[in-house]
Amino acid sequence: MLISEELLKKRPWLRYYDSVVSPTINYPTFPAQEILRNTANVEGDKAATWFYGTEITFWELYMTVIRLSNTLIDLGVKKGDRIGIFLPNSPQFVIAYWAIISVGAIVVNINPLSAKDELRFIVENTGMNGILSFDMVLPNLRAVLEEVDIPLVIVTRLTDFVNGAGVSTREELGLNEGWHHFSELLEASTNTVPVRVPISQSDPAVIQFTGGTTGVPKGAVLTHRNIVVGTYCVEMWGIGIVGRMPTSRRFVLCTLPYFHVYGEVVAMCYSVQTASTQVILPRFDPDEVMNTIAAFKEFSFWPCVPTMLTAVLNHPRAAEIDFAKRFALINNGAAPCPLELIKKANDMNIFLSEGWGMSETTSLGITQPIQGTKKALSIGIPYPDTDIKIVDSQTGEEVKQGETGEILMKSPLVMKEYWNNPVETANQLKDGWLHTGDLAYMDEEYYIFIVDRSKDMIIAGGFNIYPRDIDEVLFKHPQVKDVITVGIPDSYRGETVKSFVQLIEGASVTAEELIAYCREHLTAYKVPRSIEFRSELPRSAVGKAFRRILRDEEISKMKKEG
Image 1: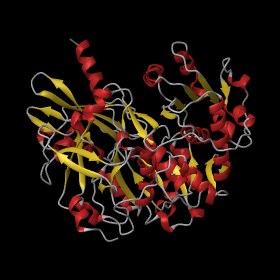
Image 2 (image 1 turned 135 degrees about the vertical axis):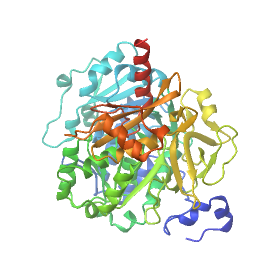
Image 3 (image 1 turned 135 degrees about the horizontal axis):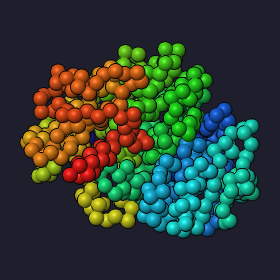
Image 4 (image 1 turned 120 degrees about the horizontal axis):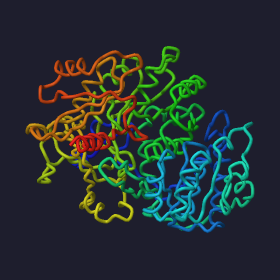
């Protein structure tokens, strides 16, 4: 595709785009729910969702969404109301998402593993008007509702949408007086006239809370335009591969959690936009995932995170499945992909691409070309219509290519604001540029390499140490499954390096041996002073390392010890 010299001067990385990818996209101006309507109109008989063998076609999904939308209005839901989805991946989540945004209300994503205090914070922070939930989390929900009022509560059981499993009743779920049963509401709803709530693209569609890795969680407000732009960007970026496949062959393996915007946009919304069947799994269980992969002839796309890819490629049954032939495209995001995992995927001929994004950028921003040059450990080049600059965080001046600085991003993917938090909004959004807090450098071909989070940098003995450098080395050890490195306060050196390691099953390596291994591969001041083994490491639902949790634990331990 011909790119003007003027545009190339502004965005020189465009020269490395795949030939079929447009450097700028003419995004439609409709609200996000029209994505579903458009696909239902032309692919009505295609399966939109697959959930333990039960399928819902695009037309059935669209009609169900209309019926629930009308029911929500009858129950008093108004434009601008905040409605929580407290569900794992399921047909109920898909239906609820499209229905809520169709009436102009705002989806509040909630991790179903949230503890009571986390749930209460989100409910209170957003002034939640309603919530859709399921039976397995009712104890936490009831505990919160004893202290905070949510006017509208709708409850389901995940198996209610699995043929042959039977549909639960209000009595079986033990619903409180005034609560509603999801399936009963749908059964009673016969109104299939589309709702006509006026919605502009600047209206909020989703509130996505950050993981809270650096303090109190903040709710990134994503608009209908953000969702539309993100969906169209993902479709455009993969058009050279998936665009060549007929819709009958398009199946997306949906293991990313829909309660995070990464899964919501890159798996759920993308599937609808491209008329792909969402093969939905409510949780990531390696055995269940392998059984599901084996049950399908092929998948057009699998967006995932490194922990998921690692579990699948190292699964005992991995040799049975030709992953390269089974998956047209696999994309890794949310957390850096270790070099050893990239090499393993390449050796297996897997078509793997990496990308970077944040809750504040609709989970997108920078990614590797699908068919073009891929560079190990690079997150790639910016998406269409996205401007990136790397600046000195102290002076705000752009650094030279090859020098490390903070990533600033300006794009239609960038959030509108933080919910009810003008101070943090002003701190992060300045003159249209989002200050990401991620440190990176841009090479001579404008490919971007993440170095680390600025808040995670360790300063020991006057040296700047990036935890990711140490993680990468330890990941290469054959007995290491996962690792997170942090800086621990030290009276002499300022901070000292400590690595928390999860070993593979049956491993015998000692902490001393791992430290010796690091000495062989790292400059002396980067070598961990101590290593602690854990059976599991704290990561978000989409794989981001919760370094702050480990650091806070160490600080608390030091205080107790005097």
